[in-house]
Image 1 (tube, rainbow, N blue to C red):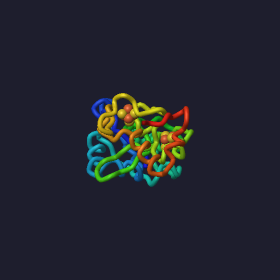
Image 2: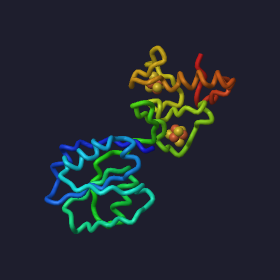
Image 3: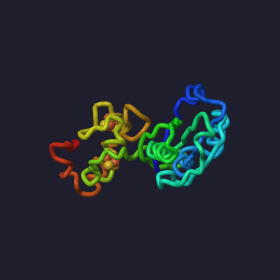
Image 4: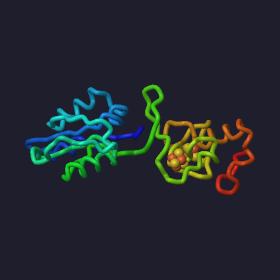
Length: 183
Ligand code: SF4
Ligand code: SF4
């Protein structure tokens, strides 16, 4: 699913008009935020809330933009653009799209940034672009400690890659010059 990070709502709130609408995609936002958080957002933004199924499927949107001073959108960047296109009006996104992720327990982790040049077959199925905060193609960097990343509280992607390449018997193929082998 798409990972969304709420913008500074107090700053956005300063832009509210007399009549506001919050359009919420019913797919990824509910993966990122609880129902209560989304409802609370509608209250904070003093907005009516309209939920639409998977906005990236380009749904019909039965809303007259003339009825509102501000139209907020809680969706990924693509969904927000669709709302703007379909309604032919300006919109205000309330979240930033940061990547594609997975949910493990109550944690959401970023696994892919849609870089357009996937290297997973060379890295034992672990993405060094997104799962290494420095996007290194020749990690690990000098900051790794006990298998943990120095930047975030996560396992070092390159230690994971190294272990899995060994497990798959492909350590010798660890991308030659582009991604050097670890000792
Ligand atoms: S290399 Fe990483 S960021 Fe790029 S497409 Fe593959 S998984 Fe996504
Ligand atoms: S410790 Fe590992 S995951 Fe963290 S920045 Fe360095 S190479 Fe990347």
